[in-house]
Image (cartoon, rainbow, N blue to C red; front, side, top):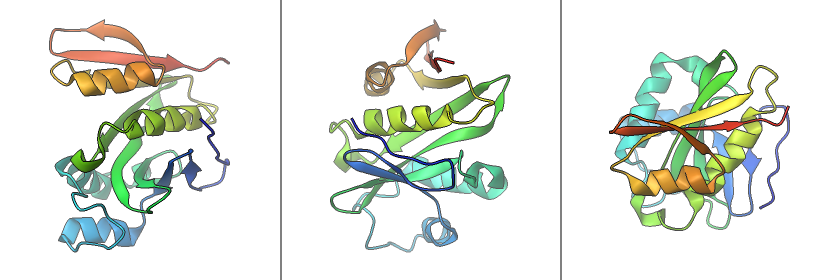
Length: 167
């Protein structure tokens, strides 16, 4: 997979996806429920709406190491969201993601997760990216495994994964 990014606020591109920063117009459209022609039919999902509400309270999550919309490179349609819960704590930053049901099973979540984790490591204060998912969601468990994350802890309901930089 080819991943492209710069250290300036910019899109993160993969072979099939663009991870782009949320714009004020994107946030307003999700908040008000005004459908956009650049959205997949089932975007935003409940998780996307929750993130938009969280972003209103945590504007620092909107910087270049924060949250992004996931769009298909070919169609240009928004199909999910992904983000880093900034700032890192002791070099560890948490990652969260969601892809709308109509686009699941295509490897988009894995592709976006791998790309954003690699991008996170361009921040000098980040050495580990973590993610926590419910064991009852085996698809999310597989996303993290396929993206190269290692399982580090399970408490019976949730499992925590980590990816560490090579530096």
